[in-house]
Length: 183
Image 1 (cartoon, rainbow, N blue to C red):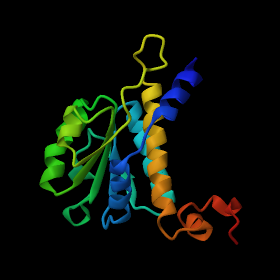
Image 2: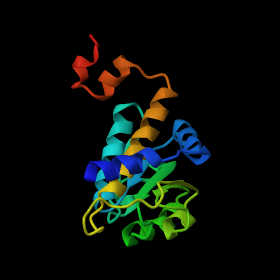
Image 3: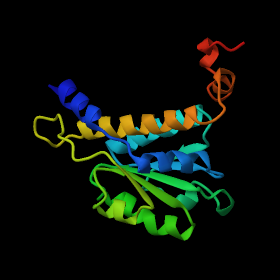
């Protein structure tokens, strides 16, 4: 049942012009792409950040309980900030938004819809839709994190496909990739 529920949700995802805009913004990023999320979406954000970084995008993960200034200085302010939250109501993420706006960061929300507080504060929303959790109680993030991960992976791979980056570059960013066919 879990795999069926999650595969249906992922299969029903539709990426639109907002997704294409997010790809363009990341491709044009001159600073850092910072990802965040709390709880399980935070683990997904860490994974997406790692994928972006290993494929040539300057990306870091910021825990939303850690102040932005503890992670970067004014000269290294991020250009794009990507926040993952199914509900879009996570207090920890919402508390970051005023500081991010003050330093000029643009905010992309990957969230359930464009009507939640995070989405309303974001510059761009990539919506995953209202998904049914595979948890028998409907509480544990299961399907929603699978959908967030699928959209994040799609974002990272679309960025990769649209930049000059091959196996040799991958080996530079991911030294354990000697198996990638590099010398």
